[in-house]
Image 1 (cartoon, helix red, strand yellow):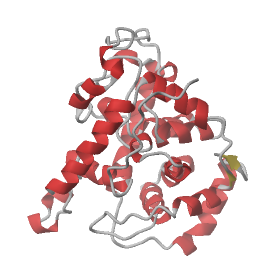
Image 2 (cartoon, rainbow, N blue to C red):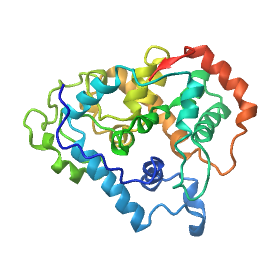
Image 3 (tube, rainbow, N blue to C red):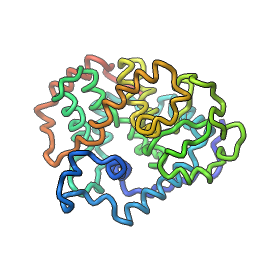
Image 4 (tube, helix red, strand yellow):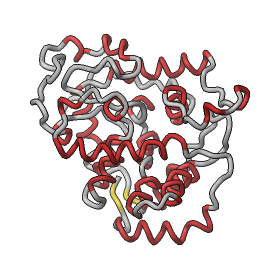
Length: 292
């Protein structure tokens, strides 16, 4: 497949976590809203908003059906690097979040905060593992991918873009927006065809799902694959493409979402003390080496 034309490789965000910070503006933690105004994180300054808008302009302009097919062809050969989960975490740790105004934690500590919050609530161990690994697909940034092709709200391609997607006005710049093959409610799909038959915009969610799909139970795989699909699990706007299994599994996605968004805290987890538990957990479900 030929590379799509006119792909802009700009990275408008300073850090991949800028997008996650923006989610906290759109979907604030109910507990946070009880704090005094001066305690809120400063995620709404004009410069940050301009950065996020530019990120979504690029994302919505270039995430076409052909682009997704091209990226699947490029990355789903899994020929970039062979690593253990721990090597992948170390690799991901080279992405340091300089943008969060409240905390200064590396990527492993972010992952541990999510997974430890899940474990504290008594969920199954595969759920805990999902919290620990769910963002590992962000290593796409370290393979040279622009941030708009790694993070961001995900959505189906090959059919009309929902107006419930954040900054949906930017889809007007996307060539699929006026393509009669793709711009109807169902596009190339059939009613209730099931999300497994629907191509999603390219990013860390789909990439990691494809790596783990043979190893984890279905609820975990749905959490990984669709945790950024906000126009469905928050807005319920793509139910016309979902089958009964999707509807059932999205209850798990909704259960996972608060841990993903609201588990950050200024006190870092004790990674050294937790390591034996997580090494045993990883060994239980995943092979020693994985191809990325």
